[in-house]
Length: 354
Image (cartoon, rainbow, N blue to C red; front, side, top):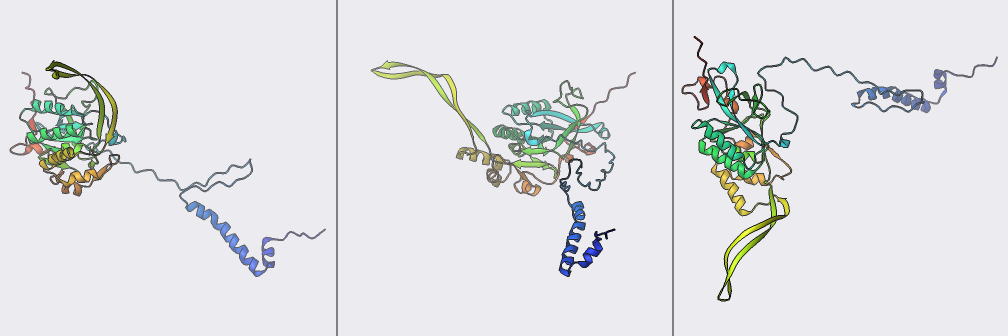
């Protein structure tokens, strides 16, 4: 029987020259460490090509422990939609809201909720709400992605005339809200029941012009103010006139002239401001008590971008008058003060049946 020529790995290793033994040792060490590095990587290692009958399965990492169970807090603000605040397209709507906290009865705080995009007709809607309130002065809680700048300034003037407080905050209605079809107010006087929170609220683009109208301006540290350049939409039109004239002493004398047609020929947007527009914006902001440097800062931010002001920056530009948020006028004990704040109302209880 022939001698078995198959040598074990140890025997073969012993017969190799010293240099080759060192090289073999390094190669063996690298081969042994490869799985270790693969397990430490954040990504699964690539599968090694093999025969068609084999299945290459990446190494599985350690299981991620499940998140801890958190007991829900009935007084915590509800989670909002993941939709970006900058994509809100609904027209701004107003609602008088009365605190739904049972511990405030029979005297509970109220506020005006202003939510949505500012349109050219928004000031007239606000004016109707203020007329309905008469001499009562309710703070305005704003949550807006911006809109028409001129309309925002008109709203700010209305707010300043009435001496109202403005604050950035989120109103959550108890049951349903005014933007839901078929929803009716909770109270006979047209007020809705709800809660207000100093979080998840935004005041972007043209909205700071509304905020500036408040005699007291509050923004919580968990809400955001965004500023950028003003965008103007310009529409060029071809106008046709009808002119009537008569000949007097051989010369044409115009009797009257009226427009009989107007056709748009070109529409474009621009961020360039005329001197008159710049002067108008600056006069408004400084007249409301804000710093003139606020407009200059706005003009440095491209219209396609949005600069989120820090609380210190908002305070420096005087968009915020001091520390505080919506809870300054909406806590359950707000109406326990004497005299009662302007936004408190006594809930009328029904007389017991005889």
